Image (tube, rainbow over all chains, first blue to last red; front, top):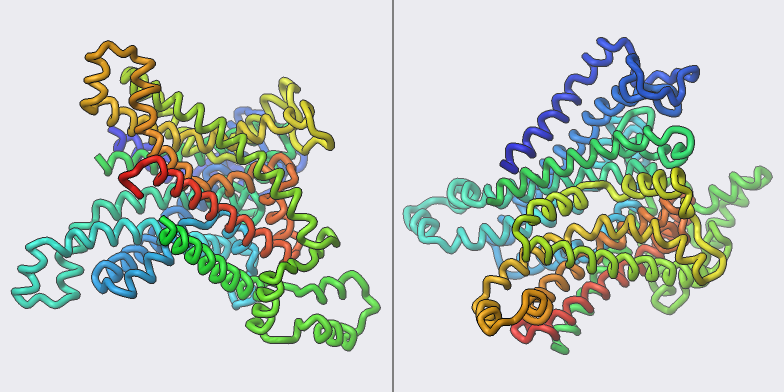
Length: 271
Length: 310
């Protein structure tokens, strides 16, 4: 039930994001082109959700934002899950000093207030290390990179705990007795058996990444305009509370639905 | 207990050292050093002037040397100057920290009380459980800056009851009015965790044999909840408080920026945006230290309450 509801929510948002260019052609509007004669237009037949402070259609920008926000969420979860699973497996398998060091590192990162650290991290200029500046693609890459720095921790702890219990099972000993290499033990016997907890952690990482990206974009440190993200659509909404309060409603609702979708999927997987 | 405490304190110190090193090196990659900013401010400065000033302030040294010098003086109690405010960092941080602690204290109190009430309702009356669950999921999923904007639209713009941002010059009732919306924003975001955990914990505890025994002796539902169940559910709730310290501080950064409240979160944000490296780093380290100490305190309180953990 929860799993289905969550998947339905995410599916709808993803379909909306994928359809964005088609909807744009169909409506005959450009989500990026300012139209200063049509600022703050309330909802109408041509602009179903009205227009923003530059006269751009809010619905189209919401759909464009879905592409960016979901891409950041999924890419972060992918990177964090790969990294976290690798680190968790390594810690559980090697044990000893390496395990202790990695887990103390994870503890330390969990104890830190993530957002203030992310804010400082997000202000680091990637242009200095040779990445192109100010393009949506490089913004996405930068955000995914800094979110993965924190994202791996939760996955690694879960993966390590699950892997430890699996490694102590009889079938692992049997596989080793039959002469399986360590790589085969880890990939064939341990990994499939810890996939459940990892999937839950991944779903929660998507939720966390979408929230973090929107927060950073809201603060002006994430995806830079004119590219649309749900967070940066809200960035100037605060200045518009008197003139166009409706601009503030939709992007937040989209974030809410996406994050709730991921949480529901995680809850559903847990049962 | 003492050994455990000492171990945790060492861990906090190591975390802070690594964090400061990583951040210092990364910020070294950021565009513009203070001399570039001085150049932008005074076009008559020549390249020789810039080189002389870099040498004077040690900015021509390698990053690692600069880090060691900076960290050494910070440990000696010298936090340096803020470029943005043209004041010693230590003077700026005191009032900001106080303001943030007031905000956080109020938000924790409100969210813990409401969260526990919601959790208790869900545990005692299973009919309400899906409702409480839905509120918890929504509260956890809604971005807090959006909740804040909605609160501003409703209570500041439409109804005009409360100020949309800022902070009162004086204390007293007027200061409380400025506190309502930020505290509500922060509390709504954190209420969910308390509600979910206390509901789960209470419904476990309520099925324990000693609750049945208390009921058999004729204790009323309220007495069972407050006297028998709540103390046992307090430990996991304290655990939530410990786990949530970091996200709470993150929430403070958002609410302070949104409501233009002077505090540590807004200070870090302004310092980052204003290229005030030193202020950003010192404020970040202080916030991290306070967060980790709060987590440690909650952990220790948990151990003090539950002899099985000590």
